[in-house]
Image 1 (cartoon, rainbow, N blue to C red):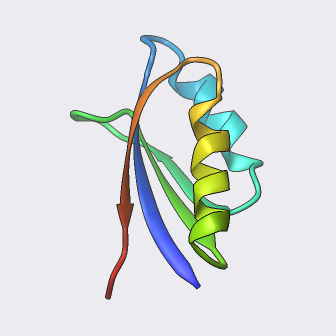
Image 2: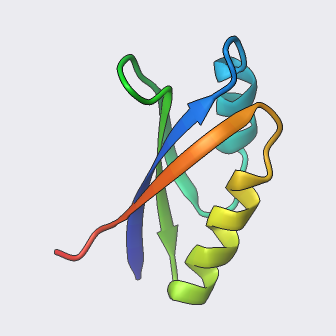
Image 3: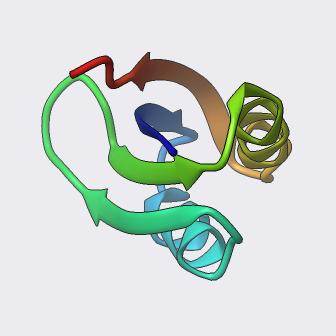
Length: 75
């Protein structure tokens, strides 16, 4: 089982919209709106790298999302 954190920048004012869309997505375990360089942090679980890739691609397609940075947990 893979665990990853996805750091997300949204368009200004779209934080809630993106947050709500992510909370219902398959593979997304936790979602938090945060202050700082990024607007949202999402915790994702996947069975393998292929499934993780699919989840990340689906997240990146969300309207109002500007950019992502994926951190895959190794230990």
